[in-house]
Image 1 (cartoon, helix red, strand yellow):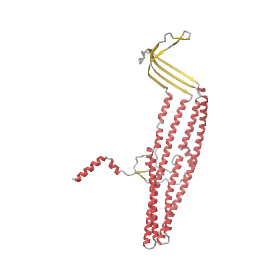
Image 2: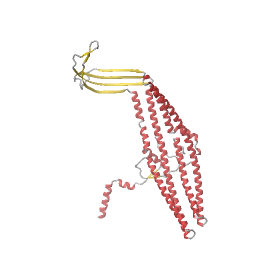
Image 3: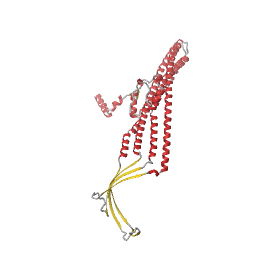
Image 4: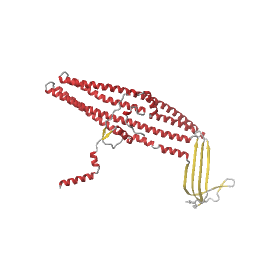
Length: 465
C-alpha cells in the first residue's frame, strides 16, 4: 500500500510539473553543423533582420510614389458650419468714400459648406526624378541586405571555425596530458629500478601539472568561442551547442588568378556597389536641383456647395437643394527668381557632392583591388606555412619518439626529453593554428571578393536572399 501511495504521489507531481518536465530532463546539447548555423543566423541575427525589414518597404514605397505623383492630390471637406455676428460702424457712399453707418446694428448669419478639391503639380522631369530616386533607394536597401548577408555568412563561418579551432586545441592538450602521464609512469618505473633519481620523477609530475593548467586555460578559451558563436547566431533560445566535425576548406590556392578575382570583386562586392549607388543618387540630386529652374504647372478642380442665410437658418444645414459651384484652373509659373541665389548655391553643393562621391567610389575600387590581391598573397603564405608546419610536426614526432627511447636506455636526461616533447607540443599546436589561419585568410578573401572562391567540394550550401 505504501508503494502504491508513493507511485500516486509521483504521478501527481509529474502532472503538476507539466509535459515540459520530462522534456527538460531529456533535452541535450544541439548538434550544430555549419549549414545549420548559417540558417539559424539568417533567421535570428538582429543585424541581418534589420536590413531585411528595411528592404521589405521597397514595394510599398514604389507604389506610393507612382500613385502619389500620377493621381491628383485630393482634399475633401465633408462638413463645415459656423455662426457669425458682424457690426459695421463705417460704410461707404456711392463714390466709395467712408461715412458713418446710419444703422450700426449687429447682423447675424450662419453658413454651412462642403467641398472637394483635386490638384496636380508638374515641373520639368519631377515625376521621373521621383521615380528614379525611389528606385535608387530600393536598390540601396537590397545592396545593404546583400552586404549584411555576405558579412553575416563570413562572420558565422569565422566564429564556427574559431570554435572548432579551440576544440581541436583542447583535444590536443588532452592528448598531451595523456602523453605526460605516460612519461611520468616511465620515470617512476625507472626510479623504482634505481635507474633514475627522484628529481626526474618530480620533473615529470611538474610537466603533468603544467599541462593540466594549459588544459584548463584552453577549456576557458573553448567555452568563450562557443559563447561568441551563440551571440553571432542571434538566437537566445538555443540550448548547449555541440559542434559537428566539419571538413576545413583547405586546398592549394595556386589555381586562383588574382586578375580574375579582382574582376569578380569589382562586379560583386556589395561595398563597391553601394558606392556606385551613392554616385547615381548624387547625380540625381544635381538633376533635381537643376529641375527647379523649369516652369511649373499647377492644375486643379474645386467643387463646393455653400448655403448662407440670416441668423441660424443655415446652421447644420446639410440639404443639397442649393446649387453646386465648380472651378477649374491652370496656373503656369516660372520660379526662376524664387530663391535664385539659394537654388544656385544648392546646385553647386550638389555638384561638389557628386564629385566627392565619384572620388569615394574610385577610392573604394582601389582599396578593394588592393585587399583582394593582399589577401590572396596572405592565403598563399598561409598555405606554405601550413605545409612547413605539417612537415615540422612529422620531424618533431619522430624526434620525440627517439628521445623517449634514449631516455629509457639512459643515454638522454629528462631535461633533454622535456625539451623534445615541448617542441612536439608547440609544433602540434602550430599545425592546428596554421590550418585555421588558412581558413581565416580564405574567408577574408571571399569577403573582399563578395562571393565564394573555394572549390565546390569544400563549400557548404548558403541561404539565398
